[in-house]
Length: 189
Image 1 (cartoon, rainbow, N blue to C red):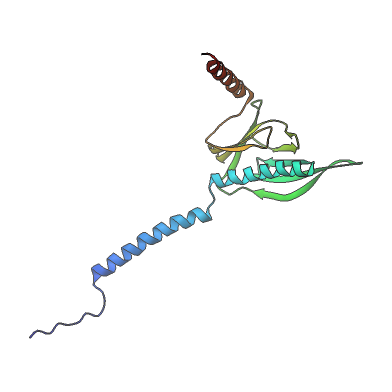
Image 2 (cartoon, rainbow, N blue to C red; image 1 turned 90 degrees about the horizontal axis):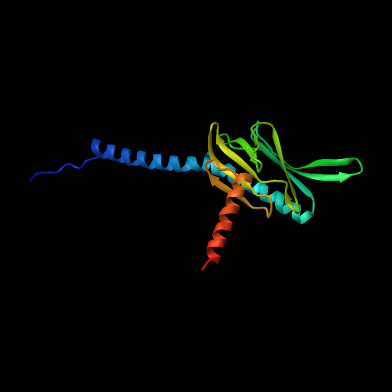
């Protein structure tokens, strides 16, 4: 009779297969973990959207003027409250300037007239009636624009759109003409 010897350990092929499976799992986990650690441009847009909605709600609830201040050069934003007294109008900091994630920048801001702000500080005042004008805030890595945050004049509406979008008065006129055309077509038998 032949006696079989019992192996103690792994063969080289078994070891390579186990290492390959572990490497595959680690690569999947690393890419998933990177999404949690490194914020994307949509995270920056969502953060600015929440700040704008906060300003709108706070201005209605407290009947005060809130200001969303966007610093294009430093890629920061902050919220301030305007106080009026005998000495004049004073800005009171609601929360400290917040820096956008390193992979997102405020490229520029366009108002409803089509005027583009590419540097400096843009202040968006909120009152219980709304804001002064519509704004399009372009976010991304210069020169690429990944997201557009559109802040509407009335109703506190804020939307996030993909790519570079503009909400200007000329576009509003086109939208109004299209809406009138659609209404006229619906009324005709």
